[in-house]
Length: 206
Image (cartoon, rainbow, N blue to C red; front, side, top):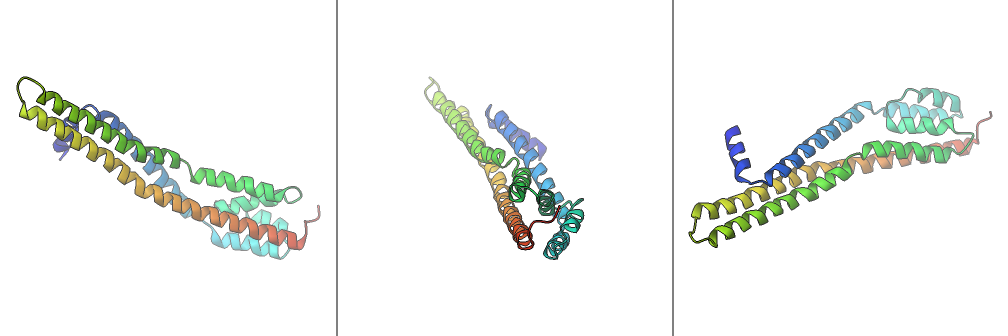
C-alpha cells in the first residue's frame, strides 16, 4: 500500500511536491479545528447561562457576575465581560467579547478556503505540465509511447490529488462555517437577552 502510494507520487511528477505540502497544511488545519470544536463542545454550560439570566431577571447583577466569573462557555464568558461594564457601555463590551469569541471560532477558515482553491489549481498545473510532456514526446523524432502515457498519467494523478485535497477540505470547512454561524446566533441571542433584562431593571446602583 505504502509502495503504491510512493509510486503514484513519483509518477505524478514534480508538481506533487507542492501538492503534498498543501495536503500536509490541510491535515494540520483540520486536526487543529476538529480538536478546537471538540473542546468547545465539552466546555458548553447551558445550565450556567440559564442561572445567569435568572439572576439578572431577579435584579441580582452581582450574583450573575459571580456565577459567570469562571465560566468556560464562550456565551457565558461574553455575558461576564458585558456585565462587568454594566455602569458603562455594556452593549459595546458585549460586542467586543462576542467578536473575540467569534474570531477564535473562525480561525483558519480563510486558510481552508485557500486550500480548497489552491489544491485544484495545482492539480490543473500538473495536468498542463503532464500534457506538455506528452506533446514533447510526440514531436520528437521517435515516438516514445511510454513517455506519452507517462505524461498523461502524470496529468491524471496530479489532477486527482488536487481535487482530493479540495474535496476532503471542503466538507469540514462548510461544517465549521455552520458551527460558527450557530455560535454567532447564540452569542447575539444571549447578548440581546442580557441587554433587555438589565434595561428592564435599570442600571444597577454603584
